[in-house]
Image 1 (cartoon, rainbow, N blue to C red):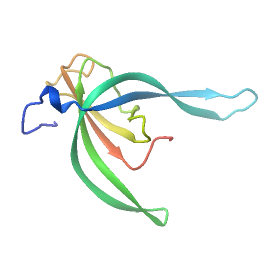
Image 2: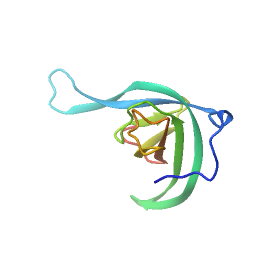
Image 3: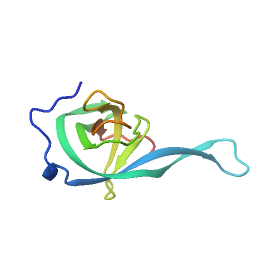
Image 4: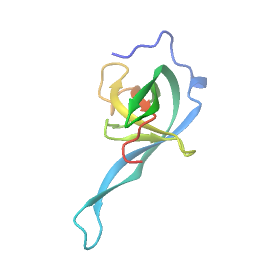
Length: 122
């Protein structure tokens, strides 16, 4: 369970994110499916860093940062979605949790465990 060491204030929600969901489509005359992203919703969010590391992958170092994003709730976010800030920053959602133990669609605040650095089909 994600816990913060203080209460969230209205001034904490300073970052505007677009929540995107994946949509699989097939092009005419082709068999392969293409994943594109469409807007699911927009939210003002608070960002809390959980740590960072460098990963050796495919013969190169990649930097990854784990973040906890807190956003006002009552939105049915899933781990298949991602966050986009509109300036090229994409965050993969690894886990979703309601702050008060409720489902994200019913919780007052939703915590999203995210990873920045690798992307689900950028």
